[in-house]
Structures are given as C-alpha cells and as structure tokens.
Length: 331
Image 1 (cartoon, rainbow, N blue to C red):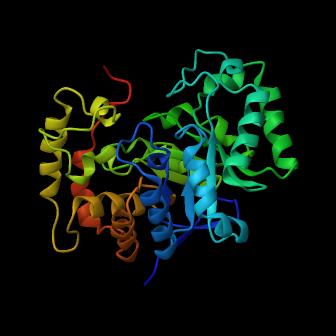
Image 2: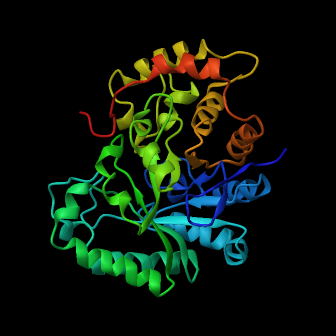
C-alpha cells in the first residue's frame, strides 16, 4: 500500500493525506536548517508519494518558496506536486488582532504584490492554493473588505491564483467561521492535534456542509507530541522553540507525553505515529502537514499513511488528553 489520497474540499484536487509543511525550510527561526538537506527532504517526499507542499512568503522572507521552486520545478510544472502558499499580514502580526483595521493587514495592493512575489519565488505562473496567513472575522465588517476581496477575485480571474483559502489563527477556529462561508474560500488551514481538538466543535461541521478542504498544521504540537521534548532539552540560541517551551513548559510537555505514551500498544508503537493517525482518523481532514527538514523524518511520517485510522478504543482513550492552552501568545 502506498500513500493514500484525499479530496481537498471542492477544489477538484486530490492530495496526499500526508503533506509537507515547509516552514522549517525558510531557516531563520529554525536553527539547524540547511538547503542541501532541505532539498533532499523535498525529494524524499516525492519518492514517498507526497504531492501537497505548503509554504508561505513569510517563511525566511521567501526562502522556503525559493527552495521549493528550485527543487520541485519540474513537478510543479507538470502537476505532480501541488502547492499552497500564503499572503503575510501587512503589519507582520501573528496571530491576527481583530481590532486592527483591515487596511493595516490585507489592503488590496499588499495582497496583489505578495502574490506576485510568491509567483516569482516559486517560478510558477499560477498558485494552486493561495491563503491569507491570518484572519479575524471582525474584518468582514470593515469597509475596506470589499476592495480586498475584489483584488483576490481579480487575481483568480487573471489565473494567478486558482483557489483561495484561510490560514486560521492559532487555536482559534471560531475566528474564521464566517469568512469561510464565503464561496471564494475553499480551504482552511488549522491547528488540530491530540491536545487541541477545537476544530471538532464547528469547523468540521462547516467542512462537511460546504465542503471545505481542511489542511491540518502542528500535528505534533511543535514537538511536544513526539515525546522528544524533555525537561532538560536545550534549543540552539535563536531557535523560536526556546520561547514556545519557556519556563516549566518543557517539564509539563514531558510529563504529559509520558502519560500519553501509556496508551501505546502493538497497534500504535510511537507517539509520532499516534499523533498523525489521530489527525487522519477524522474524515473531514484533507491533509496533514508536519514540518519536515530531514529525509529520515519524511520517510518515518510517510509510513503512517499505510496504517489507517486509529481503532475506536484508542480514540476514546485520547479524549481525556485534550489540553486547553496557547503557548504562542501566553506570557
């Protein structure tokens, strides 16, 4: 059995259920990245049957896009690789502050210029899936929304963007439910994992109804769900995870990881396998995009597609492990 495929909502695309999250290829905030290894990881992904690659203009100031455009040039051209990227917020604020005016975040000119830059970085004539990198439904009431939306429609008519999506704020799917009802938006990228199950409340219902392509990011909770984060883990200077796992968070991640490991058995042998199979157990999910910077990680993660959904008994054991937190924005 090879890599399984799923429909990406109503886009008409069929994508590998395991996709490639390319934030780490941008370097910058991820220490230990290098282009040679990243290129090998991209090639390994193709070899494993991965067809969906998610990046963003903000990843390394366009470096992730440039590397993908260089390494996957032929595959992007002939359609063997499907690409998604993102328009960064003009005010460079992640997650979105819904109280800021839309003109500071996604004015029409910024949407157009960012898309043009991504097309150049990626060496393509059209972006299959272009996403707004943050969102807040407050902006729908902003007088400028009509102009911004018109710019997006225009890019679609010009053939520069084939489908539009939203990358939803960290741990907050409720901030994008209204905009996703708009037929212009066909995909939603969201955090979903064993700890954060908030998409199950309303987003998945919308996905079924519309239908909407669901792209899941952060399946490993930045490493906490792999069992590799220990109380004494030391991140390289400048690596953003040192902030994410600041204070006593590493110890708490280790404790919870050890508790979670108690549910492993001969059907599910490792925490990374458990984490990915949990996400793929939801039929609403189109693809899950773990960050992968090394060929070995690609091969290890791709194996999960051959194993299928988790048994019902295992899924029920995971419910008590849901964990309400936001380490991206909590001090």
